[in-house]
Image 1 (cartoon, one colour):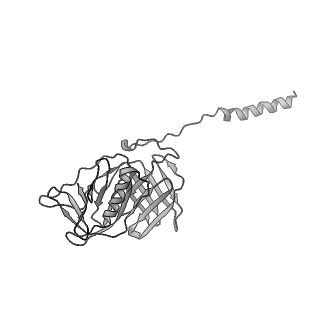
Image 2 (image 1 turned 45 degrees about the vertical axis):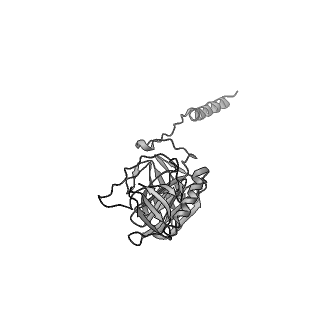
Length: 268
């Protein structure tokens, strides 16, 4: 081997060896929120996912295939294919190709409470052409700490800002393991769970006993099997018939149709 060849080989070894021995460092994702201490890696979103803002009135639903953002205060809905998740420290985000500005949805694993005192695992920030707004969210079906029911003033029964749990749909009792809820936020927005899917829409208290639903109720589109799926469809059908409401002696909320027939019953 010639001298020049030997020197060239030595030089090549010196250049390659440090790169080959370079230590790869793992990326550590941290969160200071005990509720949200869970590993989130690319491709491991907790889906389906639901979030809302009781201040701005928006509703966000994320499934494996699409993202639906309802903005009733701006009379606009966005339904787009779900883009790839972008990993953040303590959360993740999505970018939606909207105009005139890209809509960014950031899901941060920081505990959040809505205006009714309900706790959620995540704080959700939406940044679009209208600016930044914040709401609360969590994967659908994830057990969360529940706030104590609001207590009405003595002698007064309260309809709004209470999470009502359905106990009967027409003549059918709702099993304890099926969670169907409804909440009126006091600002004209109705929201809850239909058994599997989250839903929301407008409402109006036209008189002391008249509950007018705007007919614009939307829900997520997760497939529901078994009793929960059957009851969910019956619940949405009954909800569309509601015209008036009353309170029972036991504090139950009863919703009735145009003929005065009881179609839904709830307890706080």
